[in-house]
Image 1 (cartoon, rainbow, N blue to C red):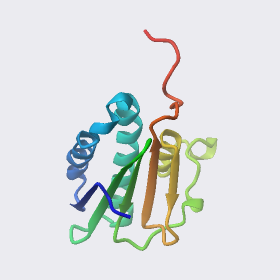
Image 2 (image 1 turned 120 degrees about the horizontal axis):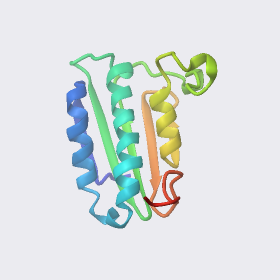
Image 3 (image 1 turned 180 degrees about the horizontal axis):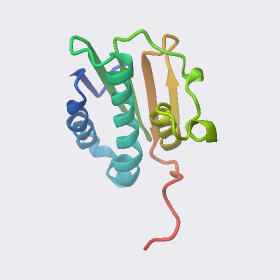
Image 4 (image 1 turned 90 degrees about the horizontal axis):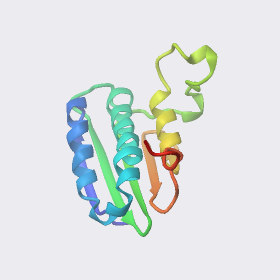
Length: 146
């Protein structure tokens, strides 16, 4: 599969905001879905990059994070791959459960799963695939306008 955009980022959390903005600006074909793109996709990609750098690569500046983005008809797909050992997403505690409310961890994964239409991991757990369907209604869209 060819990707419309491929970025190789250093493991430096200061690079996340610029990288996410760069990806968002390249999604010209998604202008009619700007709200979902600028909220849902932005937050999901930011969380995926942060997790890859902090947990996957362990802040190791010698390691890289690869971001691959494909603009398919009606959706945006992004793959974020780190050079870490991977993890089992099933072992991440649910941050909405009362016993986990004050614990660190799990919030980024929770946000990705709530804001995006698909979040899947490779078998190793060092690559996440994010899918945002542009023709789907976001749980954050709609409702009364102020």
